[in-house]
Image (tube, rainbow, N blue to C red; front, top):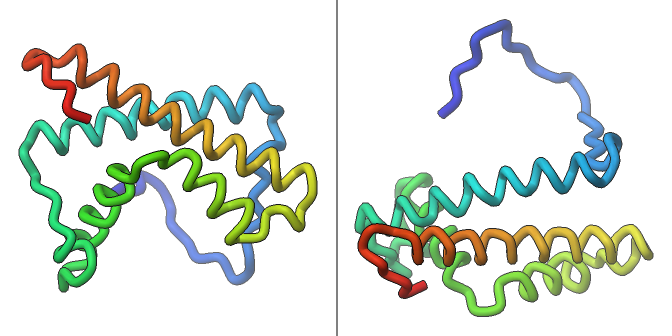
Length: 133
């Protein structure tokens, strides 16, 4: 949980988000750092021995516990970057946005792949040498 160190307020309307307003290099740099943080969190969770449970992913009463197990299920999907692309481009109908929808789906798939590669790298360089991912 993040604690704000300044004033906090509520929005009365919608917030327009422009993720590419600062050029593609800014987006790539930001997502490179995000993927590093996410990979480190995945590796840390697995090192702590927090086991994955499909039952908890589907039916835990505590939201945070359920969300943790759902994310771990997602991280274990084979071909996760391809799954991400299909979800965004086909199931969420990104193809209706034309070239922009395609580019966004590809970028998100690349982001997922960056996480996969970084988890493998961190696991290979771990003190235990465990590369079971």
